[in-house]
Image (cartoon, rainbow, N blue to C red; front, side, top):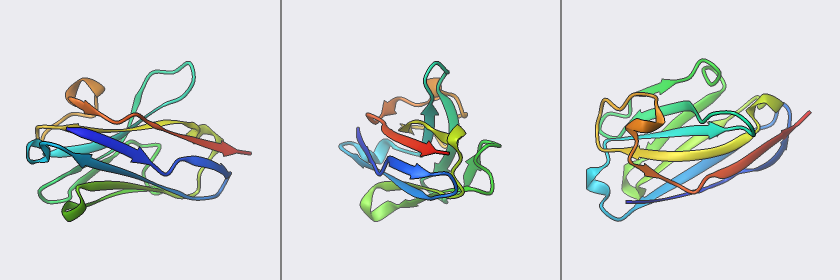
Length: 123
């Protein structure tokens, strides 16, 4: 499975961005997809997850109410709509895929990773 993320960029505080992540290869083995982020000097942290079968979603507290994860099964693509962005959201955002519906919000539960896309939020 290969994951290709895109959509990062520079945005002012309060603005919005939409990230995309397209899966290719043996995608039939994907049951959950997620977004993680890693700020400079910090550990990688969970942002949001979506199950491929029913679209059920989970969010980190920092993302609730501002971010929305969604998927397009036909395109093997997952999106992260980010609104009301804050400087604290600045990070490299990574998409990840797991072969389980019950993947926990920890990097170790995800076998496949994209290359990351940089989001910079200016104050």
